[in-house]
Image 1 (cartoon, rainbow, N blue to C red):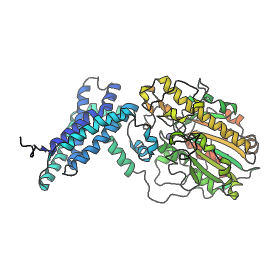
Image 2 (image 1 turned 90 degrees about the vertical axis):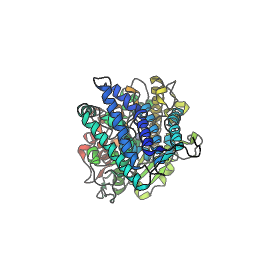
Image 3 (image 1 turned 180 degrees about the vertical axis):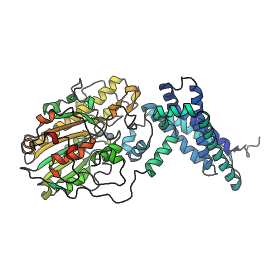
Image 4 (image 1 turned 90 degrees about the horizontal axis):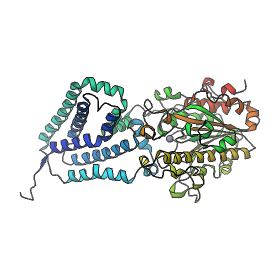
Length: 541
Ligand SMILES: [Zn+2]
């Protein structure tokens, strides 16, 4: 064969090969799930599995046919190969699924947070699943036709792919429809179509609003108080209610909160299963249902507190920040600070939130400060998968702990130890905050700690968080909600921890946060709803 004129491969063959590779090998997590839910082993299960693989391949073929142009086809295939390999790795390893909330999270995630996920195994999967096939694709000489002819072929490829998908759906309609209805998670595992869909939804879906942010609580007024109130609202990260000692966990992960006799609402539930979904919802006045159905972005809790005349400051220790919630109030980010003690390896431990707090308080406008202060502290908390990095050596009470980011490598005991150490450290941060509040006798102090969502620690082989709400296990949604009030606060407000303790098992959710904080700070506005104030039952009449 003449080496200067190697044989050229028809573009359609390359498209078909790439589609088949992604539809089969790239969907290992989907095949495993079909096994796990018993579909693959059931009668006709292998046929259904084959049909699904065929549908995926045909859909990818249709899609790639659109890109079958000389300078476009290879980059398009390479991009899909990389996305497929990365998606397959995360779905396989952490048993996550990919939906629009996950895509939003990923798009908003800081490189810093991602680093922990880039394990050697991830590199190996990308190498075998994407780099090697891409190298092959790049070497192949593709036969493209003159543009009119190629355009016809591309359209024919698109139509053929769509027709094949339609035919396969019709042929297996009964078992396919019931499987998809009974196991909704399957559709979020169809790699890489799930990613394309999720990114599209996240970028162009209804959740983006272009209009102005609607004002809220412009009528907000403060009630009279003996002393200005100082509330520290700690926004927790990845808190599992069940792993808190004060919630009855068999391990004493929260000695400092117990010693301060803080009250814990043991029956508290999150709005979402990820930071990006939960945080804006928590601070909204709408509640979960209203927030999901909203047609416009609106101001939130911290804006209303500011409208009421209070001094408000958002202190954030996550590189990813406040997800837009603190856009209109003063804020600082501590995650990039250089404290030699608290910021090893380019990441700051949560005690950094307390550094220089007196100075931060003194720097707030005096007119507002004298009316009262709300400090929001957004923790790094128990952010996974590198739990061990969140805690300083002195708080590693539970050993041995998991130090790998590839969580399935760790025993469930090691994983639990690493996670519980993060809770013990959070307990110390909260205990230190209470100690600081006690010192500030120029205010009536209070602490409220609520986490954004929970976490899976290997139960049913699930890890991390972010599953679609409807199918997420309770451990991803059941969150801690802890309240501490100073003696002065109790006396002046009539709200007592003793009374709150009697409410510890009442069901509350993030729907209550907005109204509960307004109640604590004596803010009256038309936006306040006493029926959603978790403290109203104990407040003085
Ligand atoms: Zn979070």
